[in-house]
Each structure stands twice: as C-alpha cells, then as structure tokens.
Amino acid sequence: MISKNLAGIGMTSQRTRSRLIQRLRDKGIVSEQVLAVMEKTPRHIFIDEALSHRAYEDSALPIGMGQTISQPYIVARMTELLAMSGKLDDVLEVGTGCGYQTSILAGVARRVYTIERIKPLLKQAAERFKTLQLHNVTFQHGDGYLGWPAQAPFDGIIVTAAPEQIPQPLIDQLAIGGRMVIPVSMPQGIQQLHLLEKSEEGISRMRVEEVKFVPLLGGIIE
Image 1 (cartoon, one colour):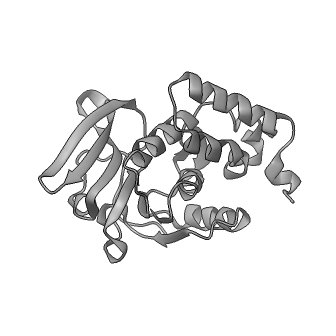
Image 2 (cartoon, rainbow, N blue to C red):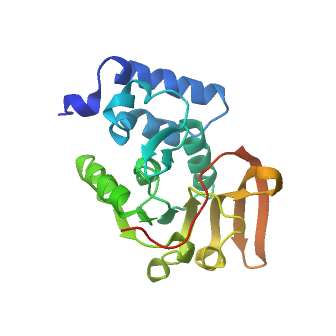
C-alpha cells in the first residue's frame, strides 16, 4: 500500500504528475520506459515541504547547500539519451544531489552507483532511497571527478553538474559501447549537454542542447 506522503494530494497528486508527463511528451520525450518511471516517482519527497506545491512544475528548484533538483525535462532527456544504448546493467551517476535523478535511473538500469561530494545531501538522499525501497542503488561520499573505478566499466554515466573539461577518469571508466551524458561549460557562460559514445575506435561526441547546471567541483564536503 502506498503511503499518503508518497501518493500525494492536491498539487502533489497523481493527476498533477500525469499533467507533467504530458508536458514532457509535448517537449519531445518519447521513451515510454522513462516516462512511466517519472510518472510513478514522487518528486515532491525530494524537495523541501515548503516547495512541494511546485514539485511537478517543469522547473529546477533549490535543495539547499547551493544545489538544485534538475528540471524534469532535463532529467527525462538525459535518462532517455542514456537508455538509447540498449544495455544498462551498470550506471554511474556523478552528483547524487537530492537523489531524484538517481531514482529515475534506478527504474531503467539494473544497478546504479552514485557519488555525492556533499555529505549532508547524500545522507538525505539515502533516506529517500530507503523510503522508495530502491535496492539497486549503491551510494558513496566522494569526489565525482575520480569516478568509481572499483565498479567500472559502466554502460552509462550521467553527470549532473558542469565541468569545463570532461574528466578523463570518467571517459576511462566508460565501457565499450557505453554512453556518457554530461553538461559542459563553454565560453561566454554557456553550457551544452554532450552525448559521448565509446567504441573500439575511440570516443564520438555530440552536442545535444543548451542547459543550465551548477558547476562540477572537486573534493568533498563533510
């Protein structure tokens, strides 16, 4: 039985979620798998209760510590790009944040490994994973620039903050046939979402669309 908190009422109800899913379809999201996972995932539990009435708007929202929960369209777009590879046994997420993107990945991948540099955020996200019974998520407090070499190679890597250069360790940890979706800071303050694919011949890269993320920083915060 779904608890009232997870099911939502009023502005967090299933009807409100369904309207968001229709907006995502209208914006070009076509993966039924991704849309189904997003429709059943209670985004309102990932943000402060005072903002819960805005949980199913298609917009980014603050989650504290200078971080944000990504716009639903961007979460859907990045997940869809990753899932197009066909095989998602092991996925790495750099930047757990509140855990929303992680939870969507858990619905399309066999195993999700997620790294967060800010310990208080990771602790909160871990509680949400427990509430949602996401048994295929493994998390770590660490520096995302370094990836997670002990669990590599990964079929997919999603990065939820923007570096100026794509970290080489992440490229190295991508499996042959794998995909990486990552925002990259460009000149003049612009960020572009990049899709990388790794083959025996090397790395191919495609710019997808303009985005806005917090910067990817190294080190950890206790």
